[in-house]
Image (tube, rainbow, N blue to C red; front, side):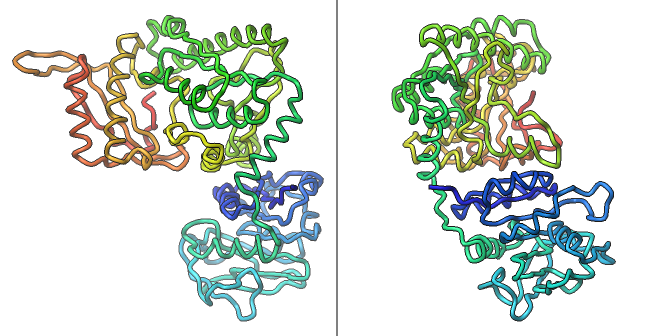
Length: 516
């Protein structure tokens, strides 16, 4: 079954990914391309429709994003949003000028009588989110006004050319009826079937991986997190024993994690896992190191060394390794090619990035078209357990960046115990799935305490819990007092070596989620 696609051209809007997500929520596949994408690349996708995103530029700027105006001649339904409206007007012979009264924030839009199918089912007045400093002063031939605010034009259309545009942002939650407008465009105008489901994705991806790999052998670096686990299960579903997963204990995993990940993925899901306990190798490399960046680099370099050793051994046993699975997600792909920052490097999965050149492995990235919530949906459809799919993000360098100062076996053991208590109490309160990340941090701060009749001098533990959608920004979570009380009480009573617990109430920015 061919996948129906809506193409979104990114002109630099902070909301571009949100447009893609709104369409995906309708079970219709969407792909984001930079606005500079060649016309042939857009045509090769055989799009049902094209959406032109907003953006911070003005169309008359010398450095305005350079899209090919011929995309307006493709004949497929096209929807311009904010800057996209200006692009349409400017390149089809109309006039865009700096507006005398700029509109940012909430506004009320009045839909014109006899407006097009884009506004079908919407009331005469709707609340929207505006963000523009320019306006269309003259419309191109054949276009007519479809919506207005008290200050400016809010919508235009030329049904004969199959082009629609709005000055506001229907994709943001500040435009409550925006999803209906997008639904109208996707279904009523583009004619999408809405059949891009997890089952469809799994079926087509499994088929593609089989064709791609053939008789070759594949390796995957498991972290135990959601992305690598789902990627591994998906590839295993396609090629079975041709996949070998490598799971490395770097000495800074959470308590019992080395065993629990194997139990979940090998025993419950049948993955072929090579588990390597290299904790002593890693901890020896971290001895005496206090600088956070040095910690990260040493862990990364040692991971590569261990992974290389195991890959070479597997290659001897299997007659060669041809492919490497990476858990790249769609936001990584978008960020690497966006007009907002045209980096050429896809974000590497976990610590596998930068593998030795001599390995020359070809990549399999089965999740590169998915957002995080879609990855979890795919995992659920494949029967993966919730304790894998619902796991909070965990940093690649593990507890090493949650131990301030030198990482020693003794400090790792202290933090593992404290961290387990934090997670257990948050789970017991029914809050784990509502929080982006929650964990303990071991501080290099000793303080005086009293336990029984004895004076103590021990470490301080910080507790961190944050709420976020993507990790780019985060707010600290106001945990209930009774939860904080039970966490503190258990840590100081059960973890010998910690006698003080503090709670981090810093948001990101100005702070970061992790302490290092």
